Image (tube, rainbow, N blue to C red; front, side, top):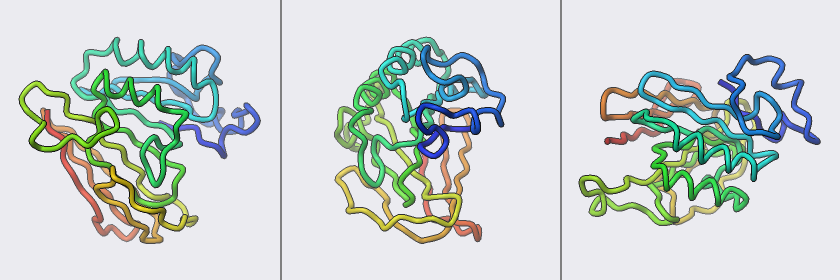
Length: 201
């Protein structure tokens, strides 16, 4: 399921990208069809956002979308990172909604380096001590480097980084959900596992 980025939507045109995919037609009003949408996959609700345009209308839609699901797990996918090698302040309203509706994981791109945050809530790290029964768990934000051969120089570490590196190799990730546990593994193109973590409900 594709996520629109800055090379896919240019000058508010994205037909050369979206014409290749058949995605749900349930996205935000005013967005290019196929650039914002959501779907359910087993116990997971996945919300795909377009960081390139129509941010305000997508914020309204995002609120309804996240409020309207009863799925146990919530994952968001978007291109520019709210928390990655650096941050993108235009997405602050989205981050507030991720906090409010307890999004578990945000998959991001754009910064061609590997970045994984600690669980974040209200712009702060959620410590193990704070994870009491029934408390908000926070959201983990990941950028799995790049799938091609263009890599950015690693940016400075930030307070939210649990893992942050540049290995100059194409990478991919696998996510498995079993009951109350989500497991995430990140690999380089040679199959070496370079990061993993679990989230528990």
